[in-house]
Image (cartoon, rainbow, N blue to C red; front, side, top):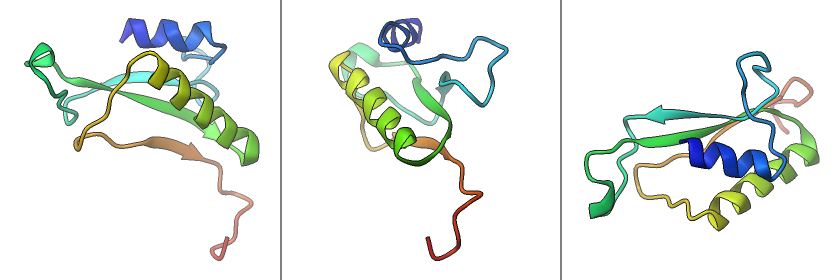
Amino acid sequence: HDRIRNVLQSEGIVMYDGTNRGTSWKIVYDSSIRPSGRRFQGQSGAEVVSPILRGQQGLREVLKVVRILMAAGARVNKTCGFHVHVDARDLSSKT
C-alpha cells in the first residue's frame, strides 16, 4: 500500500492527503481482491481509485498511472477491477 503510494507520488501523481478529496488518487484495501500466488497468501489486495477525470487529459492520466503500476510490478487477476471516476456532466446519453 505505502510502496504503491510512494511510487505514484514519485512520478507526479497527486495522492489523497486527507484534504484533496475528489482531485487526487487514493489507495484503499479491498477484501474482494484476492492476490494470487503463494507469497501473497492471507493478504487482501488494494484498489487504486481515480479522482474525477475529464476528457483527453483524464485518459492520459489513467494511462500514466497504469504504466507506472506495471513498471512497479503490480499484477491483476480475475478478482481485480478498474475503478475510474468520470465526469459525465457534459455527455449526452448517446455519447
